Length: 178
Image (cartoon, rainbow, N blue to C red; front, side, top):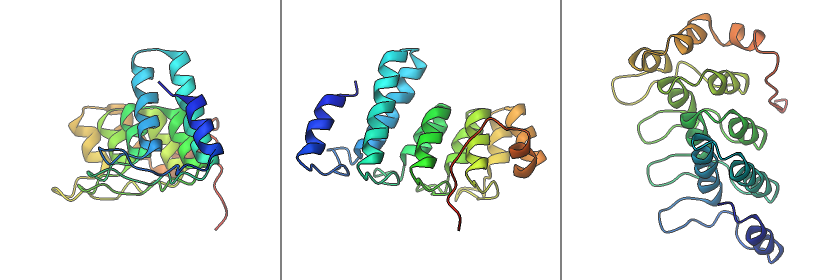
């Protein structure tokens, strides 16, 4: 449920913001899962608290690329759940947009298979590579969009990242030069 006050107290005493739980998940991954879960339940207050917790962890230096035993990152969870605010927060917190899990799937794969257009375009703005192939059959995000019957995603991917980014003036990812 966020537990923001507890985390603030732990941060004050310099607790490790990257400490994994028994399941091998980082605090950032747990917070991302909670935000997505609360979005699905339309619990805006709880979602906001978890988003605030994730922002606090980022400010305190949490590694936004820590993965669980399956190679799942917070950005993959947010993309799979279609949580554009979390995707933006993670990208602005230096999460690796092209990090792949144990199957070779990236956040763009997860946004594509689940039909999350806004999350996918946000990933493209953040530099997602749409040609990354998963390890099983060389599945790219476009193939996954077709498998999931997500015509909007397929159109975005077929037009290409440059067109998608140009048409999406309201996405704001702070990309550092370099």
